[in-house]
Length: 280
Length: 280
Image (cartoon, rainbow over all chains, first blue to last red; front, side, top):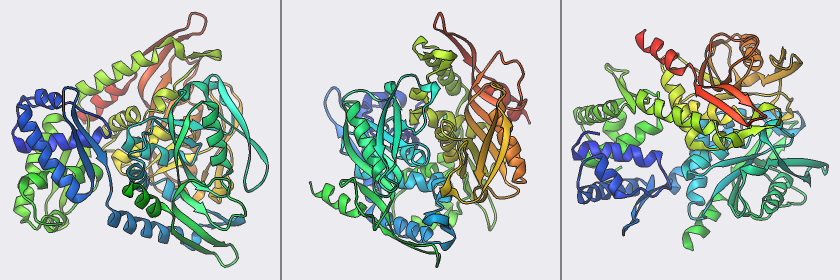
């Protein structure tokens, strides 16, 4: 890259940091890229840090020393998150979503990458310090949100399935009891898609009694790994018995009245969890 | 947002444009955001345009007039794409991927959001001018790449499935013949997930004879919509009869020898398609 001035460096640095979150980048990388002194790069980064932090769009951590560098942690402001989640609740309360059996049509929300990325950013903000190695989700509806979180956290995704696939090699399968229907079901994960000793963040689109999430927690144990967090887009309230106690929900479905086509949705426990973490 | 200097505006503008691709943003939006004159914003954008275009990281289109503004189109440089795809081919040639039946383990590639986003960016570059309204993909393995393309193009995703789901309301289903196994299969799409008259870009992870893609093309017709492009991550070569003739592949699997655990992968027809488009 040819030598460029500060204004150009600020643009390219911003672009580079946004595309490489949660990754320690040595200052020498940028010094060479822009043929500039490390001291100039440090000044550039100080300007970016100030803007990112005043906008609450991200943190810029600088690690000094020989193996040091800069790391960008995407974040979102509480005000912005609350506004977005309030809007999302209204969207979910649309009576046209009510399907026979009390199910809710959500594919327009899940099918919208912009909404998924935004919520992914919030989960990435919440779990930024949980040393997440990999995101686990259940096929198929959890996948879009899982990838959104994974993109902001810069970690891989492993996909658990109900059916067996011949294209994934050896599998580890477990049986679990669905919390709502009480039926025994099977879920499996390709053996080589999760390393022993990984810190796993479970992400899913919907949680009723939590049977699927509980199954995933057991599956993580089968892989000698640890669950460091669980995040769901929507949790259903008024459940007889919740099988999972530790989880973070973005929204909470408190009522679905099929007859009157009435849906009530409120913000989940996300901000409570965020406050606890921030105080630690 | 409080008034900030040019250096701050360049950082925030870059951030904003990257997160809002393919969207016309009026200059007044930025003028108000930064409490600055439109002429200053125009100068800022000229600097960003120069850097983005010299780095081939994106185009900045300015539309003048009352309904005008600026639009960011993410792109990637040919040199960068060729290097990346060559590396990807080497990764795919790893003999440990060979599974019984001649299948290839690819979940480490598909499970890596960074790789998916990079390839998504290339497809978004190729199809930037195809007026894509929506990305269509097949559950489950096509989903990650589909969302990556959709993020860069700022359009929604609709997910076609083999099995029926009660949580999606009315469905449109079609039967199709699998190209490789010659068996009749069913695929379906939620009625309300695709509007009539949409321009659809089909994205999938793998294409052998093309039966699934052909099925999706028929499904698009059922919705009175148009296929404006088809992109696959890997196409298998040495297929008796290809059911689809127009498609773009990132890589081509030319040989899988299960006995000797030998895999041969080359770059697909992506660059040929890119050259044709660029000459138009």
